[in-house]
Each structure stands twice: as structure tokens, then as C-alpha cells.
Length: 383
Ligand code: HEM
Image (cartoon, rainbow, N blue to C red; front, side, top):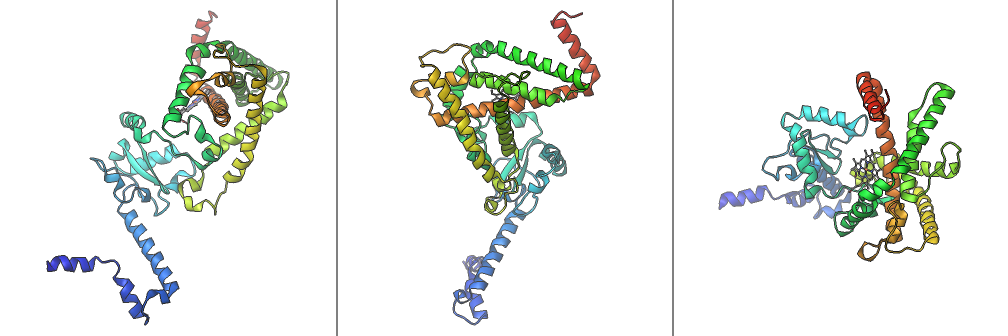
């Protein structure tokens, strides 16, 4: 009993509230607001330091979060408050993570915990574990970055929270937008875009002797996605619709930069009003009305053009498909703007940059290039 009572006295963290006023010759600490503020600050800092020191994986993994499962998750502590944010905010993150995993010991290769400021993160270099993590419902919601929220991406498929609305969008995408019949019906459009791109590549080669491939790939990808989504294409060679295409390209580029930019306040929310080096808030506020005006304009044009019945053609564009939906699949205009913009945005630079990367790898590996060439020649009976 005595032991229990002594223990409770020793662990009573409020003793200083009574002891310190006596030291300063007053009845309560309230008589010394500066001292009270200082003590509160010191207590908070000490508690944060203790929690950090006791948390493998860093500050976001405090309070035993990494030890909830059968096997504790190992990982670098990083810095108090910031965790490993500085290691990831410059250079190539996958390389930085590989270095961190090597330093954290052999178990970290399978699963490693680390903190990006307030955000707890795990990374796995083991395909089986990665598959398990990606398929687990705990990871169904992806964290919504500030730029994604401000650009209204929470109404689109990629960032919508796991739930009825997201399931509806997935159903609409798989049964209507990307149904095998619709994908096949858009084939001639894709072939036309590829052919136009090859002509413009050949023209640049003839005129200058070199080709900057990325611009051709981006123009072709944008044209292709515009055709599928809005039913409009720009004439790359004649330059018809060039102003609108430039406008659209600049919006896609800005959106890509905003979503891709590392935003400190996504991980350190208390920084939100103090530090915004990429001007995310201001730039998102400027981009949203531009996108809204553009996409709504195209939707209204489609509405004016046709009266929607239950069925649309296989080669109909995405706007016509979305406008034809009925019953519980019917979408609000704001939702349509978010989904259509997501398709334009996700389908342009992804395709262009991946193709550019493949071409760069083929240049670096001439033997593979020769095999690809032989396969293509054989498929088209070119001897
Ligand atoms: C080679 C080109 C492409 C690559 C490498 C690619 C890659 C990816 C990856 C890695 C994801 C999952 C991660 C994420 O949500 O950010 C994703 C999701 C998505 N992509 Fe693509 N993509 C490509 C082309 C396209 C195209 C052409 C479209 C639309 C026309 C598209 C629409 C989407 C959508 C809507 C999602 C969200 C799906 C969901 O969260 O359920 N992507 N893509």
C-alpha cells in the first residue's frame, strides 16, 4: 500500500504547479503569466522529445502506433517534429528511401515506418508485402493533398473518399467510359493521332536534323485525350485551334505542377498560413475558375447540340456518355467537371512522359531497340 502511494506521489505530474509559486513567492502561477507560458512550452517540448525518442519511425509514429501489430515496424526516427521530411523534400525520393531502409536494418526492407512531419508513412521493398498493403482497406483512402482539395479533385475518382460516391464513379468508368466496346470504337482516333505525330516528328527531323520528342508526344496525348473526353481534336500541322490548345496545355501543366509540388503544409499543418513557397493556395485559386469556365463551356455546347436519350453510340465522347446517365448513376454538373478534368489531366502527361521514358531507354539499349524494331517490322511484314 505504502509503495503504491509513494509511486503515485512520484508520478503526479502536477506537483510543480504547487511547488513553483512558493519558490517565486506568490500563491498561484497565474501571477506569473510569462513563467506559466514558459513552463507550458517546456513541458510540451519535453513531451514531444520523449515521444519522439520512444518512437521508431519518428514523431508521427508516437504513442506506440508502430507496435500495434504482432511485429513492431522499424524505421528511422528522423528529427523531432519534422521526422524524415528533409530527406524527402529534395532529390529523388525513391533513392532517399532506399538509403534509409538500408540504414534501418534488414527488417526495414520488408516494411519500414517513417514520418513526413505529421504524416505516418510506410514503405516496402518486398512485392508480397507491398501487394498486401495496397489491397488492404486501411489504405483505401489516399491522403488528400491541399492542392487536390482546392482543385476539387475530391469529387473525382482518384481522390474521392472510399464510399458510395467513389464506387459509383468506378462503376460509371468501367461500364461506360472504359467499356471494351468504347475503347475499341476510339481506336481510329488513336491511330489518326499517332499518324499525325509521326508526320510532325519527320517534319522536325527534316527541318532541323534533331527532334525534341516530348513536345510531339504531349501534343499527341493531349489530342487523343481531348478526342475521347470532349470529342474535339486540334490540327497539329495546320495549327487550327492552336490558341485553345495552348490554353488547355497551360492549364494541364499548371495542375500537374500543383499536384506534384511538395507542399510543406500537407505534412506540417501549422505552417499553412506561414510558409507557402510554391504559392499553392494562390495558384489553385487562379486555376479553378479557368478550368470551370473551360469545361462547363464544353459541357453546355454538348447539351445544346443533342437531346440525350438512354443510349449513346459506342464512339461517343465522355461528355455525351456522362450526360446520358440516368437514375442513380446521374451526376451533378460540378461532379462532371471534376471527372472530365481528371481524365484530361491524368491522361496527358502520364502517357507522354511514359512513352518518352521508353524511347530514352531504347536509345540507351541498342540491342533491345534492334529487337523491338524486328518485332514491329515482322508484325507489319516489312522485310
Ligand atoms: C501510360 C499512361 C498512364 C499511366 C502510367 C498511369 C498511371 C496511373 C497510376 C500509377 C495510377 C494510380 C495512382 C494514382 O491514383 O495517382 C492511376 C490512376 C488513375 N488513372 Fe492513370 N495512368 C495512365 C493513363 C491514364 C489515362 C489515359 C487515363 C484517363 C483517360 C487515366 C485515368 C486514371 C484515373 C481516373 C485514375 C484513378 C483511379 C482510381 O483511383 O480508382 N490514366 N494512373
